[in-house]
Image (cartoon, rainbow, N blue to C red; front, side, top):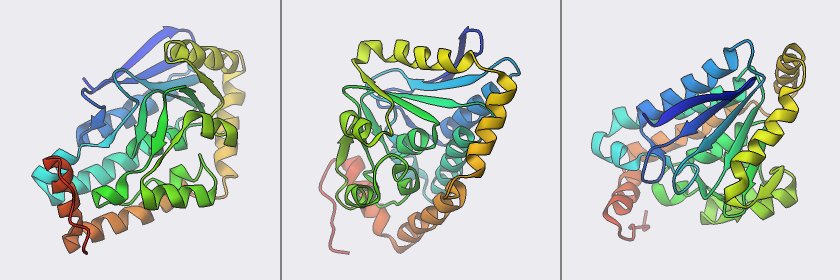
Length: 252
């Protein structure tokens, strides 16, 4: 299974993404992640959820090969699956800590950007390669991690930002060596888990209520342009180039 839930300490649930080679999730994987996070948050004794990953990196986003092979239905499924997963992180009844190592791309940004707290390994990089893949989305979540103009430059160029840069902005709480990342996440989680579960749940609800941007509505707006590019045929060339490991035709 690409998603596993671990409960090794009281009050702390750990949701682990493990889908080699790069933790790019298919449609079923996104829904499984959504279900795991929401389920963990509904356990009365849980006070915090850690989302992390095994393998080479945190998450490389959607499974582009699945979309390229299956067309419209796979794209619709990916859109809805990502929406469900990102919303689950945001709406989880308790605080969510994203523990990021290696690459955090595309859908990974949606997870980290909607988390309450981000801790990162010193090898972590964050980016949206969507423009190079014929898609749009998760700029909503990237804007929660980096300033507005930095977000725009990252979208247009597909450049990545380092964990150190995000720590400078204050969106990453701690940066540690990769070998210490899980311990760091549990240390932060432990400080939260020591609080009243009732108060924590109301705190999460209240903080979501005062957010200046409705992340669900904003992200859904972005997804509409992904489908437009798909219908126009532009996205197909970008995805095909990625799958075939060649340069894409950028004339249109």
